[in-house]
Amino acid sequence: QRQLVESGGGVVHAGGSLRLSCKAQRTILSVFTSSPMGWYRQAPGKERELVAIINSRTDVNYADSVKGRFTVSKDNTKRAVNLEMNNLGPEDTALYYCYMRPYGTSQDYWGQGTQVTVSS
Image (cartoon, rainbow, N blue to C red; front, side, top):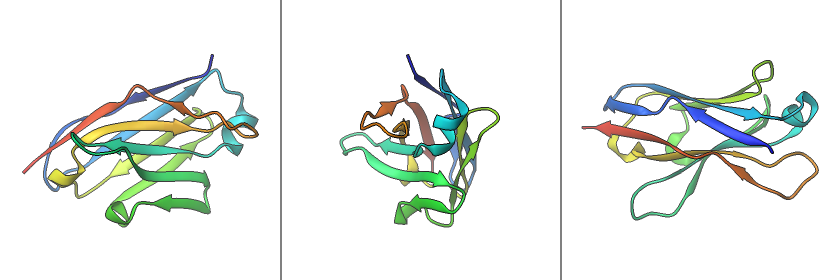
């Protein structure tokens, strides 16, 4: 069964940077390259929200709150989607979830979540 395994969360001071990575296990390359993948986050007491979605290098969408600070990318060799986060603020503190919808399906897959905490 397909699994999304996240890594890279942690604690950082405001203004700092973190890099999240998510590997799509048991996913063939053609499906990986064609599938939208990305990141959502959920802060305590709030609903889960979109952070960034990537379909291809030219088809990327970001939440307004992270534009200019976060960069999402795919690594086809590693079957991974990465999220580079710069200039982090306390408002970025949340549980970050990796997301994938395999090409040609309507089924969504989620990672287990990785915690990002930004101290002021």
